[in-house]
Image (cartoon, rainbow over all chains, first blue to last red; front, side):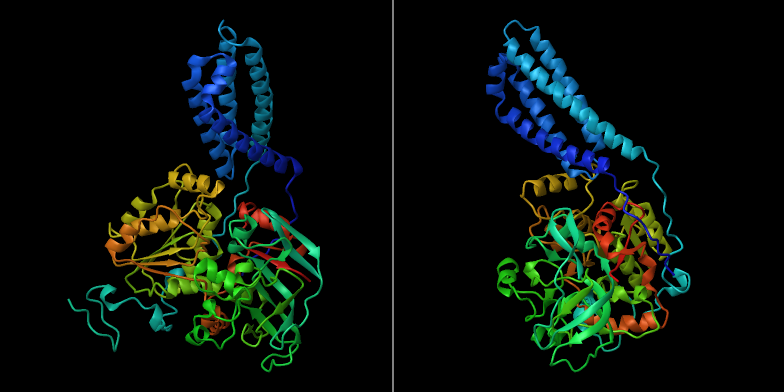
Length: 190
Length: 391
């Protein structure tokens, strides 16, 4: 007999918020990635780093992949940490651009500030998701729940009295070779 | 009365609504004593099925007691204990007379809409989108049952609700999945998905005499329950499904394959097609994630049978139909013709051959339904099957 467990609702607000934030970051990744992929030339020109157009496009592809990863997984923790790593890469690249005398320093600084802000969000989200995952998972063992009155090997074929309806039978030609044919059925033409 | 209502993706609410009334002479009203959340309700919860409207009442696994009947009902009376099949059937159309109840030609109130989407109408279903009639579902205190003189399974006293409730859907669904494999004593039956339907399919395949039943899933507690029912477990996160199936069948592949997963296959980096499917779903380039279908078509033994009780809703990409054609596979699918099997299955429950209540892991009040949808979907707290008690 199945044991019935009474339970209470247990989801906390912070768990729900972290998941919502992760989904938001996933969509943000997709949008930013698409902008970097398809607007790399304009972006590079605006920042004054024209020679970095290919790199921006590559970062766009990374953002799109991360966005898909976050949105497609029930547990996006690893992908959000992936965003944090990507942020570090972005900050290092922008920091490097600040030393480039051809770059528009004011615009690069603005982009640096924006990425730093998003990095804070990413770290907060990744930490929250990691924290909820760190809670010890309870193990459930249902190996005593067969639903059968005797061990399975003794129940094998207990319903052989059931006759499969004609419209659900397989063609005789597909039945196992050399198996006794059922009464009234033609032998396979082999 | 209280009822669980759909408001959008991940948004189910327990609210007070008007009590149902008799609308047609063949109607009956039942007081719901038990109802359950089905795996296919999760497709609505995740909003992968089109045709839901805000405020729709969920639920299609319901049983209870008749409290009111329409003027033309002769075979039911107030006080009768009934399980309500999820398919609403007229019992008179050509499909019903053939036993193809899930494609009843009369009970879908939105037959034109269904015909536009699927080519022809299918039966009306409780609580399962306006494509199938938009009938209020049974996760509520009371349920109006249309065509009640045919849409019911009368059940005796002396058995608990928990033993009988699953005659409404998952038990006959698992049973039909195995029956349409036409199992031979030499067959290996591989079943993808150890959720409630998969669990019923495992027991059904065993009882129908399969030599070997194999189950494929990744949730440890579900695999442990499957093993209890006589199945050999394969954890697809830990091992290669194709290699293990070939090992277990001496390289020949399983003769019969059952898809008890449907359109929301698990997304895993180990199976890149699932990630691509998920991405396509997100941008509406594909409606379903058919990883299980692809894998079944690939591993099934030539001249084998693919049985698909898992629900699919629309358009599927990258289906290896070349494998199906060249290996001469037979595909059998469809919503369950519930009433075709229930007399026989009720007898088996009464005789003690099986007790379907083994699958229940959570029993809660109706008000806790919204939280349980999330618990069930996320496979938290060891959740496999949730029963709701409205009263």
